[in-house]
Amino acid sequence: MQGEFVRFGKRDVPYRDLPIHGKRVTLWVVRRRYTCRACKTTFRPQLPEMVDGFRMTLRLHEYVEKESFNHPYTFVAAQTGLDEKTVRDIFNARAEFLGRWHRFETPRILGIDELYLNKRYRCILTNIEERTLLDLLATRRQDVVTNDLMKLKDRQKVEIVSMDMWNPYRAAVKAVLP
Image (cartoon, rainbow, N blue to C red; front, side):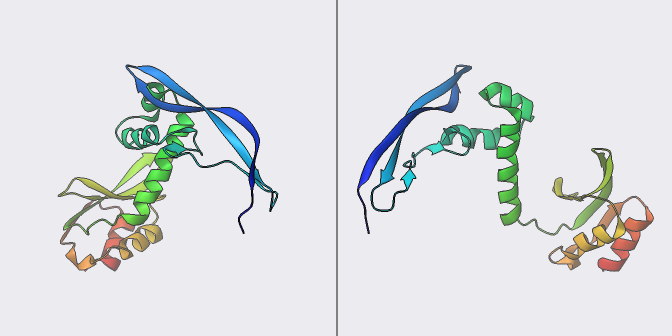
């Protein structure tokens, strides 16, 4: 059943937009609030081309998504006038989305090494031929490396493994790869 909508106040809301000639841009939008007489709920209509969760335009959101993959968060934040945490949140949301949908091809030449990051050693798996990162594991323990290698689609495609001879890596490769 459709009820009658009545105005229930308004508020000026700032939305960030792409910088113009290096100057930060803020759009002030009058956001009206309505109430439904039938069900007594209040709501604000959606604004096209605006990302409400971040209070910015869609084009700024897409710009930050793209640039945060190529530049440090602090650089993108300074360039757009956003907080560094906002840039990081946008990057993390996009990376999580891409991680769910993107599947890497199993490499012919697999590289296994460790990386010391945030005061912890982590295992890094790479495709040496394509010079791409396959995965960055939370730790370099043998069970974690073995489980990740088990998840590789078409493991039989791996012909060469380049790694240092650290025993957990060697044991994981011997157990999983042909």
